[in-house]
Image (cartoon, rainbow, N blue to C red; front, side):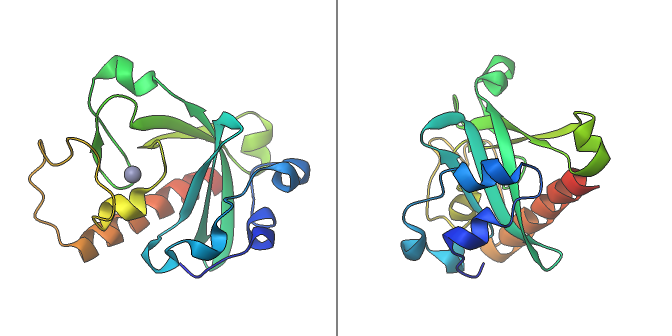
Length: 166
Ligand SMILES: [Zn+2]
């Protein structure tokens, strides 16, 4: 994705109040991020572990989504869990259930969309082999190229953002 600024991020949010978008903590190292290798910008709020944020291009517009993190939910199901965006397999706690309030009337009625995602939201880096999840690859024999995996992350992300904004 193209490099974006703190201001770009704060004005991109579609499912939280302007006040929250103004107050939330953005990544401190924005200028140094490997933008060419990012399909989206995702981060956890260091001061509030239950909050996470994701910013991506969606239909030509920079779109930010505020997420609530439920950690531990995936662990009760199995000790291994898979990210639904990049399909990286993680062991204990490496995947978290992240829930986004939907936009518009659905959101006002309390509707949310939940997705199991890499707990550090580093899907782009796992996909490109720049970051390794402990134990990943042991179960899956993946013959996809990196390009195919990147395309898959983008398709899955689009589908998620479509659900949030539908
Ligand atoms: Zn992932």
